[in-house]
Amino acid sequence: MLPLVDGELEALYERLYQPGNKLYGLERRPLHDPQFVLHWREADGEWFAYVEDVANACLAGYTVFNRLVEVDRRTDRRVRSPHSRLAPAYQRRGIASAVYQQVLDRGVCLLSGARQSPGAHGLWNRLARSYDSHYVAIAGDKSLQHLGRRVPDGAVLDQRATRRLLLGTGWELEAFAQAVQMDCA
Image 1 (cartoon, rainbow, N blue to C red):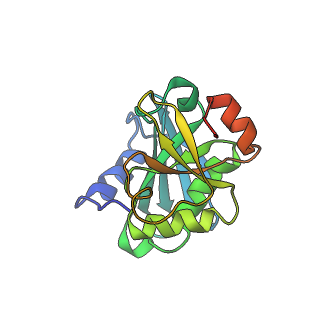
Image 2: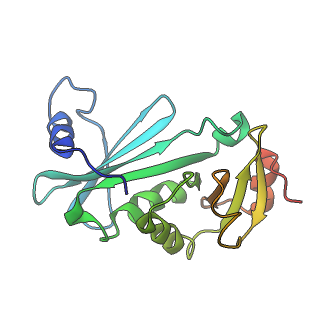
């Protein structure tokens, strides 16, 4: 989880209810708990999910599903790299998992960032219980190379090019590899 800047969530929350603001009137989606609602927007191929705590009239946090400049166009059409920011009081409550699951359940595959905090690593491990998980490397030509379902701790896992891949609903490894021309040798 990335640290929050003071006042960041409060400012975003105000914009959600400010007529004329680009965050006003966003598509709303339910979340895993009726206390929360998700405000969803897309801009330049990236997705933004703002999690509102309706009961307390505040923003609990948000997730950005980034495009990856490190991958080729075929892969870019099928994967996003999520990064979440949640207020401390809302961490470890399943919010980020629920947001990621909505995207995975829509058939989008998720690719981890180059570095993960211990909390993010735990989140991905929990998601890997429900979604097909693999490790990949991003090659110099921006293509993916399959490393396997597990990689040894240390040298391979610590390389910036090594990422974790969660396949969205409806994807199997073979079909994903063919769609993005991933090397599975």
